[in-house]
Length: 300
Image (cartoon, rainbow, N blue to C red):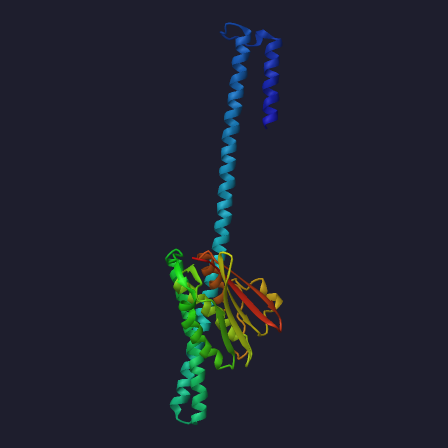
């Protein structure tokens, strides 16, 4: 279009130059006429070019925004479907089991040994359901509060000791030895609630996929200006096909070594919460040998 327009104007100017009588105008000289015509054309072309460029850039930017919004909506829709699935299945099923177990206990036809087994099952169900509700509530809160976090100096040993002690009791029921090793002076910059929620999820996962009489090691150490926390187990490892989507809402939950239930959202939330705290999370795994998860926090 630009080339055709230039050729047309060039032909008209050349025709007028060769045949002066084709167009009459009140100019002091023919040179003034051609100068006026030339600069008018140049200014017009510049205005057209500038306007077209602006519209093109606006179109590209708007298209980019629409694509980003479409991707964001697609992600939100996937998360919504996952959460509805969790609420409809992973919450309803434990409640149905609790109801069934209570009916069995209420029947009075059970021995003390059978009652003890049922009580342990009820304890496991309520514990898993409580952890699920905690994850869902934290996720909902962060979504509604625009992911606000309270970053402050946190003494690692003091703040996560109670969480480790609580999970050590759970691990002992599977004969798993949960040990820890870290220095007393490690102080990181993190959110207290999110830190403990992440540690609970990582340790729960390690307990879930570690066999009876297994081992879990919790280590915190300083590496330059970062504090790296590692949770290593000698469980069955992560299958190759699940590694790429481990931190994605689309991942499917797997049963633990004792048929423990899960939802598949714990690690997704851990990754989200680590990013909110300027942290990093990654893992190393080998099938049949175990998995190590790493959490990296900035030193306060």
